[in-house]
Image (cartoon, rainbow, N blue to C red; front, side):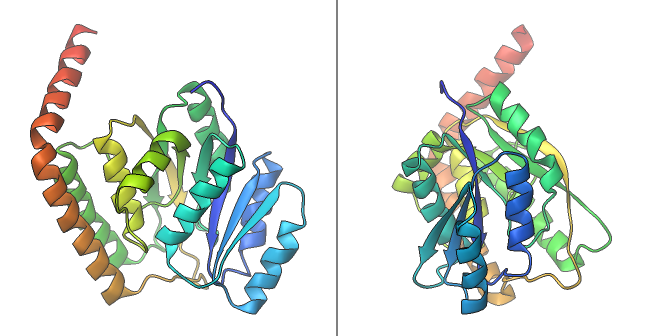
Length: 253
């Protein structure tokens, strides 16, 4: 990958109170923003229309809410058409540490083929149920990758290299809603995409807007784990052989 031209992708669904601060914080670091309106209500849509008139902001508008995954897929395709090489995924609700973006960008410039992922550090405000659910997902991801390479598959703070990401989303089902983060990162791992992890604080404001629907989204996540498990089974010989080659290279180094 000879060039490094990153942008930020911000999926938005009724985050009118917080999205402007996130987007402007990214622009202050020189990062162009692609805002994906996933069928927001008129008050949030108006905020996005105003942001889109500012320099370095581009708005993609979906006609109806399709979920985080669908919004991100549209965002990746838009970023590619706009000529970007990398896309930083960040939530619109302000829970991710914008001040860590430069660390992501520096690592990506040094290793442009790699996905730079957030390894979340949680405080006392993190809901206990979310933390237990993430541990269960962590175990399933370790099983489905036959490795411990992915410390957290649900943190939506990542810098993606676009070529392998586009190849994945055009040829595989990565999830439409909250199952998306898991589906895409496991499939990128299967393809051999290098991954670098950055410890980063994740906040859960008391007045934050969450669109996680317990029954529906947990069911979709469970289905994604099952789909990935069966995908792993026929890839297992190849995945294990790759691990052995990596171990040999480390030993020789």
